[in-house]
Image (cartoon, rainbow, N blue to C red; front, side):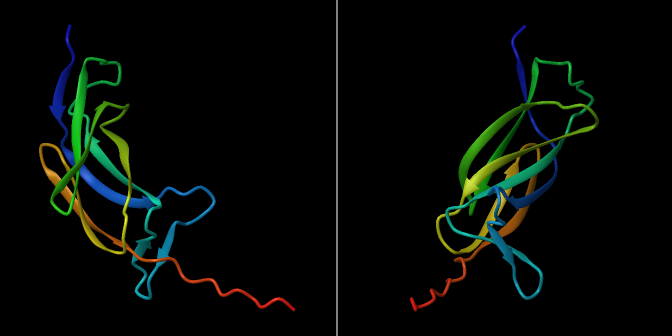
Length: 127
């Protein structure tokens, strides 16, 4: 039997830093998260399993990552156990700015991701 591919019903989307041992960003004075340029950011999303059991190896759910209206990547995932499955895209944003990030399937869930340059570390003069 050939696999089938369904557009995923996206339940939610989030961004988190994926740098091991580092935050890869921080929070501004209002508590909003930001990330650094050229550091991987996980664009995580939950999708509805639509009653497909995790033992079904023939049904894949498709999702696409779009940034500022441009297609970036696609994923095809099997259903996990439970009513939803979590997975993510990893993306490096090249420059500071605010980006509109969308995960598209049967529907679209979006968020804004802010990229800021890391703080400049002051070097101590040699004594």
